[in-house]
Figure: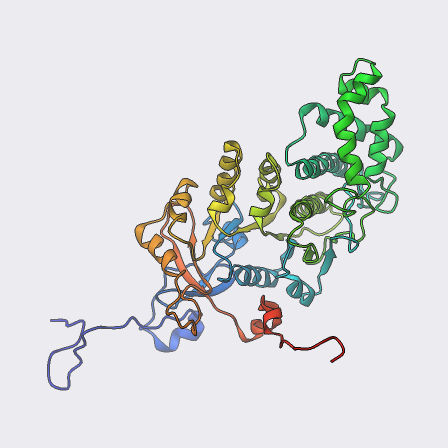
Length: 485
């Protein structure tokens, strides 16, 4: 007769509670010496090692591309990270990027406001693109791709993709500036004006230095060529044309001359052209928190330029001009962009929907579902829910009780146990506050309708350097006294 806790005899092995054994993952070559006391584990081993399973301590590996391409666990190589501030979202992202880079992928951080990722990208030998007042600019009309040695078919694809993104870029800037999406007639006017601009600045012959800027587009609208008048439906009436284009002209002038809240960030030539063959981070940390419009516009611009560059890289790779590369794209502070204006979520939806076709993984980050659903328009709210629902992997950090219903509304069904676990991670262990928060570095990984995998991120000694310190200013010693002391 078997006794799972030992026999109740003198000097026997009876125990009230049997702790689970420590689990290790290793190769069959290494583990053969302890046969037959080895067994397989149910946790996936494909992907970046992120930490240990919360209950068993077993190693947990995961990243969107590995789970899409190798493990076949998800249908879309994307992730969504939700969690309250200060619990380790940025650390999780850096582990994903660092481990993924080890697999040969290229990290792209499209907008870093704090900054959380600049040190990591620089340590990888990557490129830092700085945006902000008098620190760096991004030209919405910049055509920085060298297509002189490209055959006609990929050249046409690159030009066609650029024209579509260029129009979206300008519409996004106007949406952020106005906090409302331009009307259909204004979109038609811009399309016609851009076509006229291409006659003056042929895309086949220009580069970043010779590309037009917004002021050149403004002059086209002011000069009112026939095609633009037709798009405006002014019927040859000059006064009617002026009335129709008045608001559009005024808004583009404000952005093009640097007299709007967006400053001169989008009014001049691009200061730093994005590379295709190395890690890239858009550093927006110099933009003040009070400049909400500029922050949102700069984030959107970073996303637009980043995905546009990736698309051109894919076209060139298909044409055997450059090697095929896979990219890991990070899109942080999603809540800030969604609040920038009515209809802005439509642009985000379009940018992010085709990531599988682009050969990239994307990771979107925000604090809570409540942030995503704070928009007044019901259509925008549903589109924001779709961003979460469509993500292949959901990483849920510590969240309050009020979030549970909102999560379920976004097709993310949590069991009662899972909901209680997320809430338990929020509350400090004691009033003394000497210990770290219980949910520090803890996440619940959810895919589809499967039970979630709870894990805690673990930093290796090499990762414990400054690249994971997001509170550097608090760790610097403060000095009392004047500048001359």
